[in-house]
Amino acid sequence: MTSLFDSIQIGAIDASSRVLMAPLTRGRATRDHVPTPLMAEYYAQRASAGLIISEGTGISHQGLGWPYAPGIWSDEQVAAWRPVTQAVHDAGGRIIVQLWHMGRAVHSSVTGEQPVSSSATAAPGHVHTYEGKKPYETARPLDIAEIPGIIADYVHAAHNAIAAGFDGVQVHAANGYLIDQFLRDNSNFRTDEYGGSIENRVRLLREVTQALADAIGADRVSVRLSPNGDSQGVDDSDPASLFAHVAQVLDGIGIASLELREPGPDGTFGATDVPRQSPLIRQHYKGVLVLNSDYDLDRAQADLASGLADAISFGRPLLANPDLVDRLREGAPVNASNMATFYSQGAEGYTDYPTLAQEQAVA
Image (cartoon, rainbow, N blue to C red; front, side):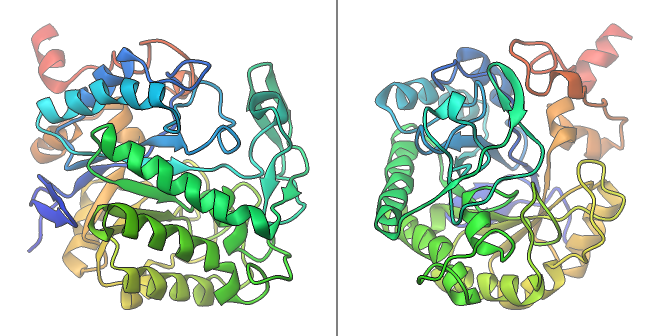
């Protein structure tokens, strides 16, 4: 039987276990979106995970509206990422960077321009800014002539990622951000070749993913989706048909892995009654399938044993337990995460979560 602690080949990456670190926005970069030494300590602490998927990292100033989140479009950012990836590698880990364009989920006070999206829509609720929370703004639809530039930004970011020492990249196509805004029919009302039919709505994801595969190799490219239910106001009337097609497209490109964020009706960080799409996606995608959301050891082992998943990504458990792999293996208790410090600056709630060995030493 496949174990959570077995190694796995994820494209070009030899992962030491099937416990992966899910991408987690943390906000410890500078106001200019440059990584900091504290981030190197944080990621190195968690290097025992089979593979770290970094926090969302902006591919451009236009696409990055989260305060103090890192980017990877400039030489300064690349240079500041190198000590982070080196620290992870020195600790025996592997790390890929999640490439992020937030689309309409930004505010002009952070980016300096009106948000862009597939169509002229606004996300519900409020957005984080440096001046506190503000209502989301209505996005400007991307002109079709601008789309090659968006794809070029992804490619530029991927080349920078390799130069910065990352082992690969993940396309953030989930959680209601730009590519998700193109994918789903309650946010994409375009009438050109990027809107209307499922094939057209998937076009941007396909073109971005293929361009990255051509640039750095498909075996170093991953994709993240959130295929069931609403995410920041983005949803679809027929997720089964949409994401079955997405799975077929990504399988054809031959990406290294596909990660699915699938909250359930009792989800602790988002909930939905829309059924999980992973059983359907598993039929169409034959690569490494990574599942995410509210997993514990028993549920993770069950989905691995059934063949539904090849690996499981853990978010908040790895945030609060840098040695989560050891804790799961030993059946040890886990630290609870402190949401109040998720997006604050500084070490509190970031690098000060104790390991099991530290707890035992104190006891």
